[in-house]
Amino acid sequence: MRFVYVMDPMERVLPDKDTTFAIMRAAQRRQHLALHCEPREVFIEDGDVHAHVREVSVSDGRPHFSFRSEADVRLADVDGVFIRKDPPFDDQYLYVTLMLENVRERTHILNDPRGLRDANEKLYTLHFSAHMPRTLVTSDRTRIHQFVSEMRTAVIKPLDGAGGSGVMVVATGDKNTRSIVDYLTREGMRHVMLQEYLPAVRAGDKRVLVLGGEILGAINRIARDDDVRSNIHAGGRVESCTVTPEERAIVAVMAPRLATDGLYFVGLDFVGGKLTEVNVTSPTGIQELSRHAGLDLAERVVVWMEQHARRG
Image (cartoon, rainbow, N blue to C red; front, side, top):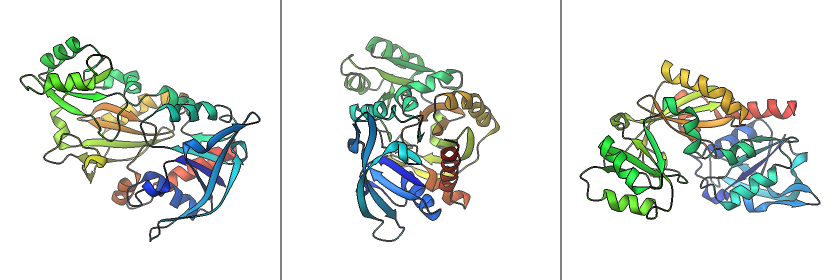
């Protein structure tokens, strides 16, 4: 099969960590062709969606990738499209999802562009608010300080951040709190999310990877001693872990909504059994999970794509 990967430049890929690299490698083992393009290389001509792509092969040894031929392809003619551009979800990302609307019912796309557009990774979680810690979304600084006063300690995060960028802890009595709130809200002009601080985060922030409503597994990300953020990108270390029955029950509740929205491959974040985030744009962690599981779970993603491409 021919799969197009809409993603960042290959030079930015970390072969031992990047989930997209793992998917490419697994697809290559299964004799599929990888076609790489950046979001800026998707275009519409004569009413149809195309992309300027490069045929790419990947390797665990150096060089980790090599390009061969390049060409323009009509996306309705390929077997599947992986949207794997890392956040933030900016204007360019928005335009690509809108262009892909023209091909979404002719080529299987992971994840669905409409779902990506509708699912802000912070706000989408609120569809399942019964399973979240206490949460406030606002730009009103008075409301924020009242929430912090009630919680005593809270986590504040921008709505468009990723990899732990901009995530901070605010607390009553901390002289930095007002400055942090002013900065992240741009003095009351930008919405932010605040969540009750869960002390269980010191034991880890669990990433549960879900494919087609089924749990692939989980990893536990533990923050450095000098940081509150558990994200791998921010230096968190990874340990193996299990998914609790309570977390499985939450995933089961979420699965129908995820399927309806075309969010087939997602990363759910849990702290102390509470859902904190739903990662949909470019979920990571499959390489770390595969190492702990002792099998390449990226191949499960490829097989799932094969099956849905054939149905399409």
